[in-house]
Amino acid sequence: VLAAVALLASTSFYRVGQGEQALVITYGSVTGTNGPGLYWRIPFVQQVISESVTTIHTKEYGFRTTKQGTSGKAAQYVDETNEGVMLTNDNSIVSIEAIYQYTIRDVRQYHYDVDDPEGTLQLAFEAVIRRNVQNRPLDDALLNKEEIELQLLPDFQALIDTYEIGVKINDVRIQNITVPKEVASAYED
Image (cartoon, one colour):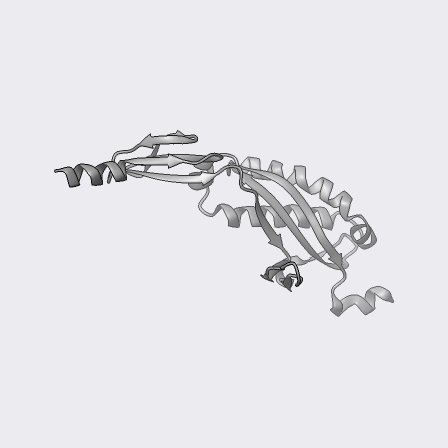
């Protein structure tokens, strides 16, 4: 009896850490949301999903990091040309490498309102950045990346808010806008 009580007690209590939000799921539906603290759940009936609402998630667009950098070595990257190549409004081709950062603001929306939140974010970012670059001539796109960044952030957040995905976009940074090697000679001409 004591062993059963000890097993029941050890699986009944759960802790939600500082900066986390937890969903209590009873028979597959969300029945509660808890902030930091110690809580009790019904074992084998209720499940708990906990997610940090303070962690900043960084996603890459147009490139992927293959090896993280250290104090003595630079990071290594590989281009994702299928993702980052796009047209400007004067039908010139540019290649863009960018990152965006977000935090989860509502765990329930993030886990239950969208099937693939990270994939949805990536597609929304692609739509916003392509629309912005396609409204500019080539020289403007190459020379004004800070201006593009300033326009991307509110556009991206507005689009994400319509999806009710439960995230806040913290930052958008364009790492590089270049003319692809294959068309560089035509651009120089």
